[in-house]
Length: 354
Image 1 (tube, rainbow, N blue to C red):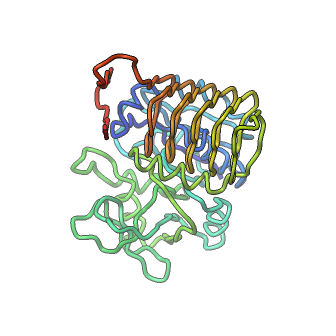
Image 2: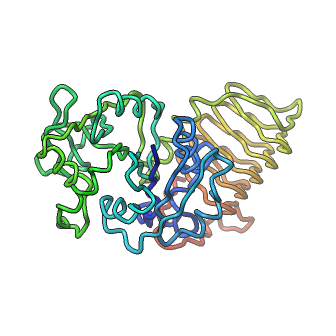
């Protein structure tokens, strides 16, 4: 089985973070989202992976390389325009050939072992398998109507949902999917929808199975979703002290600290991950916080947040539920009268509570 990861989106809902970083490379628990997907596929035995890339292809190629570090071989497939998931599958046809494959949206994270899903795909001799999970707002997703695990209908973002089982963005296909895609037309969004192609298979009486996800899933398309994914992953954290802390500091709970990091006169309450080469002084780092490599926290309180590599937080008060970009600086100025002095880029969001 081959893998196909879609990594061509612009990440407009995550701006301004995605002005400087491809959304698939945004870190959760100090590791890019795309790394988790590649590791999961590799562990499940999927060794040949195609990465469909767009405008951010150079950044993704620099971060992933040939895939050797993940135990896989990566082939890059350029999609000129984002014209739908089914269009991306057609673009990847030369790479996929006549092999079965797993299609995975590159901004999704899930808990379940992919090997279990692959085994069911083969065991039930499926032409397609879709991974689903119950959601409270099915109008926002592709939705499957299911009888005894067999899909009898799929609809993309229905005004009147046929069920609450959302397609989460992980699919397994036999090569019959290509002929199904060739029989569909663009939707109202001018995209070739993979749900329409799956519906063709359903109408052809093909075996299309719904696999209900075991465990959590997150589409990391919004800032709150990034923070949720960070929390889920930190809950699985194994504590490890690779840096140094002084006698005036207190570390409790599951805390992982990278090499070269120094903690002085600070309190760290896990689950927390702190990268390599960081400095934490006179600070409090609360639960569900990830601190990227080479960051500096000086006289601050931060919890339930993502602080990316190279950021500096200095006398910045208390931060919570925040995402701080790479090499950002948040500091309290010495001036009077007291005022906020801000340099804010397009599409930023600041909530100031004083």
